[in-house]
Length: 183
Image (cartoon, rainbow, N blue to C red; front, top):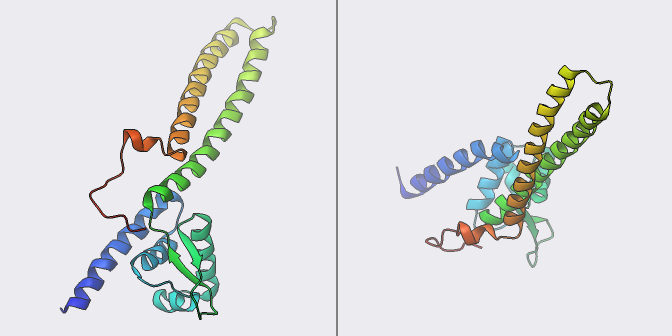
């Protein structure tokens, strides 16, 4: 095996692993593979080049690039003399994580808080109704305590996401400075 083949094997191993694990962020394997290709490519690429490299249809490639742009993992770049759109990966994985994590967790947090609030309102109606049976009142009281605990958790989780968005998290858990910044 020559040096170029060894380098390709090493890159392919990393791209495969990255593609498999990006599902944690809601990214499927083909989109993850595209990100890996752009990450290891030193020059921006056109849709045609990406399509040829990965063997995907142009429509699928365009959709994948758009998804990566929405996730702020890929950006369109300008290059003098080129009329085609060029794309390259954004290499700040800390910021990518912060963006992806924040969007996904905020959505879940707000959805859960809305449902808990609605349920608490109904439970409070039961507790304030003198016609509610003793059994239901006991169960509703326990449920209310559990839901109030859950609201406390979601308040904490909101503050945690705030610390990621504000980058305050890096005061407690610093970025790894042993490696050169690629961006």
